[in-house]
Image 1 (cartoon, rainbow, N blue to C red):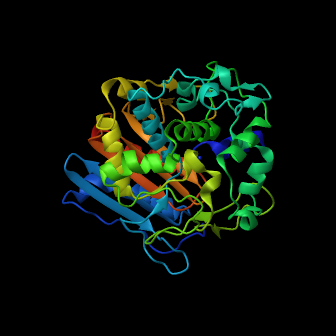
Image 2: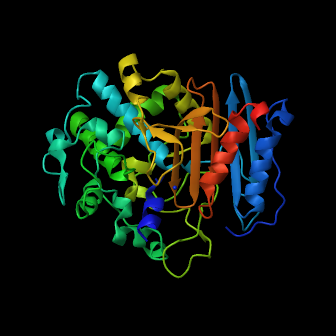
Length: 389
């Protein structure tokens, strides 16, 4: 059970067998160059995923592929400008805002949580006076991940969520849930993926600026980059249109085989750790800006990409975690950077070359089986040199 709960928390945030034939749509004149990626998309649907989209940018070239469906009832195909819940890609947005505040001298990454939020991170071995903001952002704080709390995980990942999908959670609620559990390790003495870290980071943004983390993300990132289809939904349960339906198979309890449509939900339980909604195109624009250094001064850019190994931890293999971003070494030896996200019925990756010139953004609208394996195969098909495949 413990390992299952950790898996649930991995990306935030880690279908009906569709018989409709899968086909990939191509948006440039080099279709054959992406034959391997098309095969991965088609195989994902053949293996039971509802639908998948992949959006590639390589310099000035672009390619878009889709397989399966956005809606298993109508057979409506997935398409390029769909909104989807992008999970833990939210963490990169939050990290950029914190780093911008550091660049302005309004906070320091070496500030303790206790300095800004006295008494908030306390109990069961937690001590905010010993945890730095940097440790929040690189997941070395040791704070317990609230999404692994047994009671909350059961509410979120069993059929109980069908009744609780519109429940509202404040950041304070989520931190209190984490504080009811023991620390994972002493600050700076390990690495552990904890969504609580970014809930706390969002609270610090609000304390420093006097505005919500969502307002700061909008003001500092979304508007300047022209991300017209990226937003923080707050407690709004419905996705803007067009969107794919988000399908879930619960993994806790007796009913683990029925796919449920959980497109509509209150995502306040994910908050600053994973509630953002976006599109493949907007995520391309954002992560290209992040990777290229367009958003941050050199000192803060260096901090963001100073990564800690995740080796030996139950997370994604062959990765290292920076400040709200991570790297993954592919089997061919190529290392890609970016982030990914998992929430109910949606798995996303936005990964690419360190300079941001070659990027893959993909979304799957089902969350059972092993979506991370599919996304990894996509990265290998797109990012590895032809001679290595």
